[in-house]
Amino acid sequence: MTHVIGSPVWTARHRLPALVSFTLFLIFSIAGGIAIGAGFGALLGSTRLGQIVFGILAVVLVSRDLFYLRIPLPQVRLQVPEGLKTRRVLGPMVYGAILGAGVFTYLPSTVVYIYILALLLLASALEGAVVGGIFGASYAAAALLLGARTATLTAVHQAAHVKALFTRGRWVTLTLAAIISILLSLTTLAEGL
Image 1 (tube, rainbow, N blue to C red):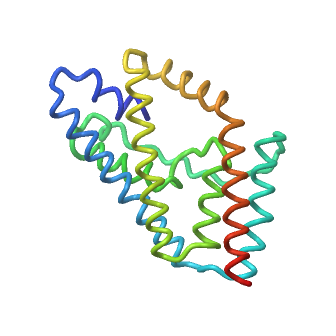
Image 2 (cartoon, rainbow, N blue to C red):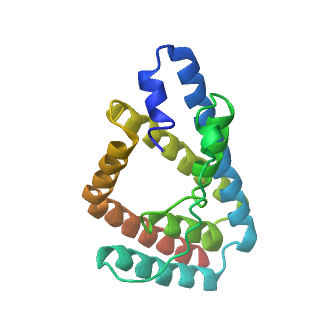
């Protein structure tokens, strides 16, 4: 991911085309997040049962990562076609929409599953669109920052570097996911009272 989007921004001889590529990636990441967020938010809406199911599943998902439980999760693992990766306009647009949506690629952590459950079980279409847009923007920012940090590495070394960052940041991510899940559950329970 970072090799395709982030690195061209930092290593390109001509900054303008590289910045245009990243801007397109950012816009389409946000658009992908908004589309998935609004769509998932509109599917079920918030119900009392959904709130309870979310709380239980969020605990199970955080426990899966925290205690290395073998609970299989669905993976789409969609790949952007090789021919699109080198195109300055179409590549970032397709790549941004796929990654910004957050559900069409390999998911290394259960945090994204908690995000999807929150959209499905707690959010309205508007809330989902807002949260999805933020998710897409954060994904694009991560690609740019990681690209800046790993611009001189090969794609294989970048992947190893990103994996190491995920491993080191695991506890922080899981703690934040647990806190957000608890706050979401409490907020939705308070709305029901």
